Structures are given as C-alpha cells and as structure tokens.
Image (tube, rainbow, N blue to C red; front, side, top):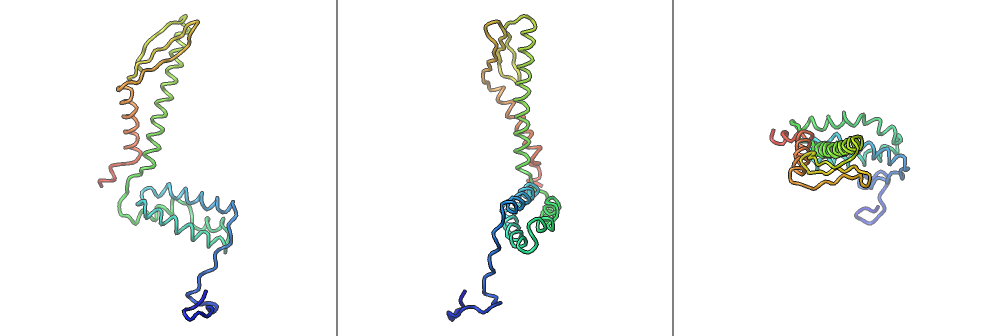
Amino acid sequence: MTTTTGAPAPEGDPGQAAAPPARLSVRDRLRREWYLARLSWHLQDYPRRQGKQVQRDLRAELTHAAADVGMARAVRDLGHPLVLAESYTSELGRPLPRWNSGAVAATLAVGMMVYLGGAYAIGTLDTLEALGGGTVTRYPFGAPTVFVATQDEFSVTQTPSAPGAAVLVAVGAVAFLLGSRVWRAWG
C-alpha cells in the first residue's frame, strides 16, 4: 500500500490493510458454516437484516481468529449458538415471531395429514380385501375418495374438493400460527 505521497507505507502504519487470513480448509469452513447455521436458527427472534449482519461479522471474526488459534478453538470460544443468540435477542427487549419455526410446523402438520390419508387408504383397502373385495366411497378429510379392491383392480381414486383443500389449509395455517408465535408481532 502507498501513502498519499506515493511512497510505500511503513511497517505498522494504521492505514495499511491487514493481511488476508490464510485460506481455510474445507473442514474449517464446514465447521464455521455449521456453527453459523445453528446460530441462524436460534436468531429467529432477531430482526432479519440485523441477524444477517451479525452472521457476516461473526464469519469474518471466526475466519481471522482461526488464523491464530484454529477454527475449532475459535468456534468453541464463542460458546453454544443458543446462548450467543439469547445474548443478542435479550437486547431487543421483546420477543419476535419465529417465521421459520412456523413454516417447519406447517410443513410437518400437512405432511402428517398426507401420511394419515395414506394410512387410512391402506387400512380401507385391506379391510375391503379381507371382506372379499368391493368398492366403497368415503370422505377422509372432506375429499370424496373411491376405494376399489377386487380381483381385477386395487386402487384409490380421490377427487380434489374444496372441503378437502380447506382441511389441509386450516391444519397448515393453525400449525404455522402456533409454531411461529405470530402473536408476538403485535406485542
């Protein structure tokens, strides 16, 4: 780097840029990013932009600290991601909704409904087969479904319906609202 006069900057000049840290190994980068991903999950209560800035700052600090003490020690010195996240969120003064948790809860709830529908279909077909076969129409979760178990055919046919869709949407919405703690947005 040069000074304003064009001469090379002397050693120890405060205007001189710090040397970039040594290139991290794949293992060190994975360790750093795994820690930051766990921290990100716990920082859901933190405003998004500020949380991203915290992660950028920590990524740079970890990279520089790894040059001195190694990535394992640098990550260990930060402590558990939950504890670090709680120290950041305690500064907010109030809890915020956890949108990611709500999305995960809604996905799991709708997935469970689909799983239950599949289990219901298997049980119904098994019962029809045990009774000697036949056809039956049922309305699991509000959607008309025809179950056929005969010598020639073994099938389930479901017709999409507004009540069936409403049940899935309602289950997903309730799970999202509870999982995200949406009431915190108005607190």
